[in-house]
Amino acid sequence: QFVAELYGYKEHSVISRIVNAWIPEWGELGRHFSVLPFITAELIDELEPEAYIKLGLKRIGAIIDGKDFYTETVRKNQTWSLPCGLNFEHTAAFLARVSEKKLNKLWCSHGRLKNVPPGYSVMGDKGFEGTTGYYPNNNIVLHESIRWTRTNHQDCLRQMRFDKNAAACEL
Picture 1: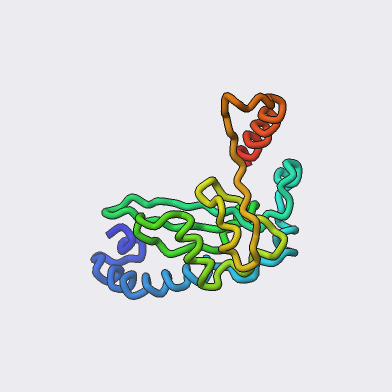
Picture 2: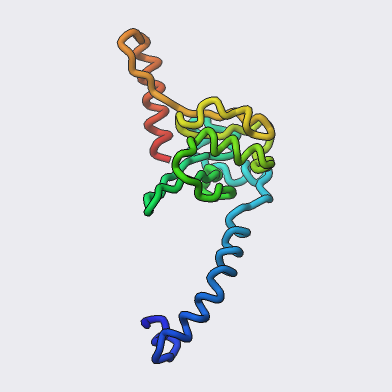
């Protein structure tokens, strides 16, 4: 009703018909504009944040992350973005029974993510460990982790790794 009144209509039925007719078109445009095929090494280098370079995280071609959506049934999707925050690829929403690794393998096996250039890494959490071979250009998947074990007596190395991880988490 509010939108109808904004456009000078007393009844919302006219606006409802217009919106119902156009929402599928807007959705299709959104799908086309949210997957960007023009990601190149030059673009990645140009948009690489200084904070990543200072941490030694150079040539990061993508950051992958999975997301669960809790609706009537749980849905899961994944997104790939550049370190500057530009999303350039995403999966459709799948039922939550699929693991992050399986969804990543499925998406890469269908010819997606060829635009992550050879020699560039992909950053992801531990759920994406061992997925390097899924990418068409065999992009190494990095995941920083902290291992706190009683048998690890390398306190200096552990503190340096912790400091780097803490700084990376602030990006």
